[in-house]
Each structure stands twice: as C-alpha cells, then as structure tokens.
Image 1 (cartoon, rainbow, N blue to C red):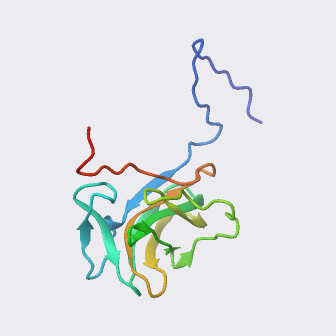
Image 2 (cartoon, helix red, strand yellow):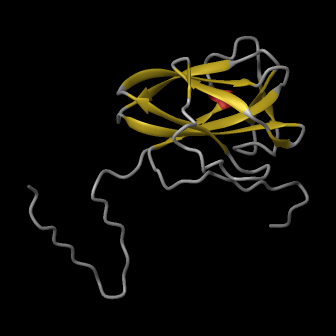
Length: 169
C-alpha cells in the first residue's frame, strides 16, 4: 500500500493535487480530418479557430473521418460542435465505426447555444490508433467544427468565444 503523502504549500495558496494522472483532453478540428473525400474545408468567423479554414460542410448522407492516436486507455466522453442553419445540430460521432454510448451519460447534454458543444456519449478506448468519424443525421447536412475527447468526468461541455467584425476590442 502507498505511504503517506506530504504536501507543502505557501500560506494562503491553492494548488491542485492529482491523486491520479490529470485528465486527458484532445481537440480534433474537423477541417484537419484526413478523410474528407471531395469535401473542402471552409472559412467562417463563427467556427473554431475563427480564421483560416474553420469547418467542413457535410452533405446529407456524407461523412468525414480521421485516424487518432490514443496514448492513455480509458473511458472517453465525446463532445462535438456542429451547426445547421445557425443553430447547434445533432450529429452521429463514431469511433472505430461504433457510436458513443449515451446510456451511461443520460444527464449530460453539453452546453446550450451556438457556441457550445453537444455530448455524443462515451466510449472505452484502448491504447493505439482509432478511427474518428462524424456524420449528419439522415436527410440533414451539417457544418462540422470540432470533436473533443476527454477522460474528465466532471466536464459538462465546452464553449468558445466568437468575435464579430463589429466587436470592439
């Protein structure tokens, strides 16, 4: 059994103490996916990272995918941001051809609003290379922005700031 842990902190300070490894968080920008087929990355200030190529318009029946490296095996929660007609859009996110499991994540939906993410579910991943894919729901298209995988069970979703040309610094 592990022995006692000694921690010395300066007075009036705070520091995190991880008893395990810190959570893993991985961001995959859809415009960087390798399996775009004939689709081309598009630009748009309302998508991450805000300039340059920022997202991919996936038509109904389409899909994009890429290969990802997992160094730490575990249960990963899968969040994504996709838009349709200026609003959050439902999509299917698959890892190795399997959809993420929503059964064990019933109370977490992601962050509401156009700048937030939705939760696809969670999936157990082993160390190694996996395939990550995103596709629109039947008879819909989506503008796919990014996918985030995290082992942090406390995250309810991700959001990002969008500035417009009319914003003042």
